[in-house]
Image (cartoon, rainbow, N blue to C red; front, side, top):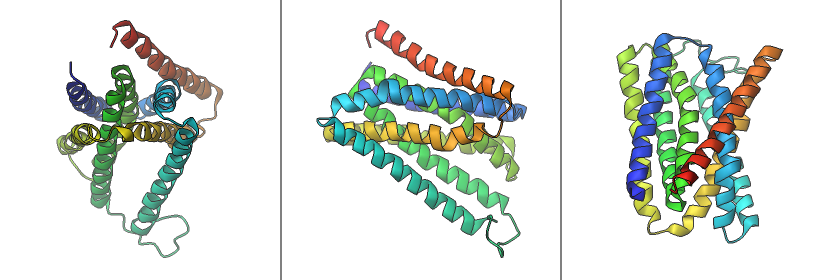
Length: 259
């Protein structure tokens, strides 16, 4: 199977799988599933970043110190981007510290903003998947699986927000499906662009590692601390370990098939 076909299948299949899993969980409206999925996603992201993407980024870069500097810069960049989103959110919604914030919460607008933001996020995921597959097939498979693992709890959250914003279940599902196609668009465009600029692949791999580490450590792990009970902590550790173990297992499987 060609690299382009791997990218198309992973981007399209991963997006549809994430949306379907999110819709299934959201349709059943079982919020207690989300913390478990988030714990698993943390493990998958950290496992992919440290066991696969980061080693490939260091190996493919002529200067390992420059690669780690790119990762550090990427983490700072994602921090600033998230700050920009929060600042915009504080201007548009009631925010702590805003004494005269408008009391009216526009749910419909929140749903639209969520969809736009998710579409951009999926587009970037497609670029990272393409860069990984162009480095090696096993790296692409692991990266795609890690992104899918992260996307499922995110898509569940987006689906529930759209329902809360007044969208019907079918309309919320349709919006999520359309948004997921941005992964395919980003992957295909990146394939043709990077084919003429392969020197960018090590940089994108470093940025992919930075993205995975930042999302896991800055966005997902803090939410786990809201459940400090012993049984919750044991559950979190187990599913984080399961996420890491699944990435390791996938590595062994793809190596066994000689991909």
